[in-house]
Length: 600
Image (cartoon, rainbow, N blue to C red):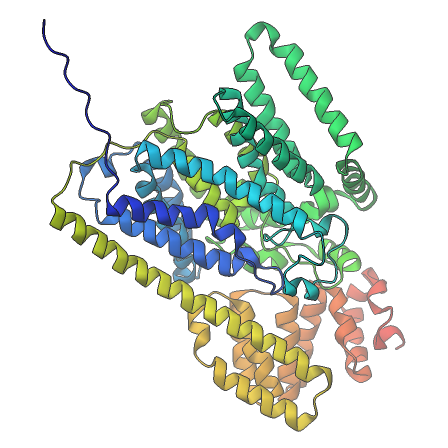
């Protein structure tokens, strides 16, 4: 009787695999807990930089072993290739080629990092999937803990509006982001519980806890995503003859939860706003962002405005009536950095060509890969939930969420074939090269973070000196701050905020020519009302009154609420004469209320 061939040994975790697991752990279990109290811009600040460093480390781990042919024959590469190809074409036609190509760098790093994740052994993949749920539970605990002022970080004291649902922010800066971040871990835990096993009760408890915090955050999009994911999960697991009754039961339970929870008042408030003020206020004012994206696509149908340039074009894309309506309700806070719809934003930034290339790449990947099993159950449920959120929010533009989702997507697919064991010397060399490359990425991320913190301190200094310092003290402090910030803007080349800070400091330092130069650079990066207003102030200080009035008028057209910042009576009335001459004042007479221009 022939002897049965022994089964091949399980792949061993070498140093490079451990390095990859560590970087992935940073993405799913460290990035979400990095708190930044500066203006609640966590997903654009340190979270984004740390995520970038982790993706750079994973990309390095992939590249040092990319000589293996199997790494480049992954059937899912066309999906990444379609997105990147469309982005590159859009960048070439954007008018800001270098900036737009730079905005694609995180996507390229994530694509290569995905390759490293796909090579992890099954044991590492299972542990990472469990870590995603554990991190979600910890985030949910922090959300509840931070409802108590005694347990909040000290920086929460700066945020005077953390009441009601805005108290449910955890470390992600917004209850909506918290709801989004917890949704897929909740469904993942539910899937594990339904699989059975010794830990099914623990998985079930984690799922229920995460769902409860999502509901408490009153995030409608996340709640809807949970319903969609739960429905798909039930539909696929329940026998066909019982699907309709079970589905109907889930709908009833969902309605009861909505009507008996804080979601009810949130839903009614959103509907009332949309009914009272029109479609622009649909979905908590998302209609305006959708309209801006549509206008960008209409103006640049083939290649869009360029990758990462939605915010730079968001004001000029909206018409006069929409801008005035938003300003009347929201005051100075009227701009959208994202479209709140990832597909629509991708279309606005890369045009029809970009969308078609992305879809073609995805279709080719699905056709080549088929439906092999992965390390995550109920992939269809997670996909349904993610699709709902991506069409109503911008999760792929949030560092913590995009990191979590990309890791989950890699874990949802089977591992790539393991490489043949390399010689010990080769393995040490691979790890050393990966560490060096990761160190470069971490250094760049740290420099960007340090620059962002320095500019945040510069803005805080501006507020302090404007609040009551004498003229001489203001000038000296502004000059000293300019010296400290000199050259740091090169680490944040696409940030209009840094140029605005430098320009404002130069204006306070009695250097209007330098201020004009910085404000002009900010205007080239993004046309926004505050940029137009600031450059007008600098021109006025330089004695160029007519040019200053032109910028002031444009600032008011972008956001009429900015007229309330003009305290000089003569200047306010000069602006009114120009606005009335163009007919703008007659179309929006409310803009003069409470300003020095109220009387001619």
